Image 1 (cartoon, rainbow, N blue to C red):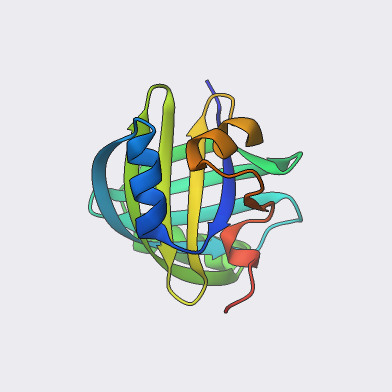
Image 2 (tube, rainbow, N blue to C red):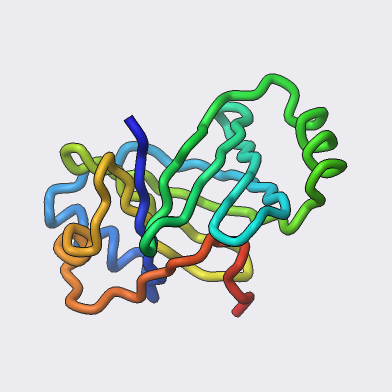
Amino acid sequence: MMTEEIKARIKNAAALEKIIQKNGSIFSHELGSTDTYFRQPQGRVLKVTEDQRGAFVAELREKSGRFSVTKNERIEDAKKFKMKMKKEYGIESVLKKKIRVFILGKYTINIVSIKGLGSFVVLESDKADVGTLKKIMDSKNPDIISVPFNQLKKR
């Protein structure tokens, strides 16, 4: 089954955590990660994520303002893989993230803080939609992000 995700910029991560927990979300864990993004055509993402669990390669495709994860696999030698992808595509950017993961039924909710970019909420499920994100955030008009994190401007 393919995972979809919808992202929104948030002003106050701690306040949103309280809201989503009040709405039934359960805190699962926190990760620190480094994402290396490689140059790709518009609407596609290729990145290597390195965190406490290991290293993973992910491919995503944009579709109607959300992203479908088409590949997410563990890789054994991140350094070697990144060198190969750097030669083939070039590195677009490297982002440092702190991710706090919450679970609400079939949804995973990530509160993501990215150095230099700000804070975001990412809703993941087999069918992520804006209506569900609004309900979970208790927000009528979330600041939806329809580009990959690596394409956002620094603040």
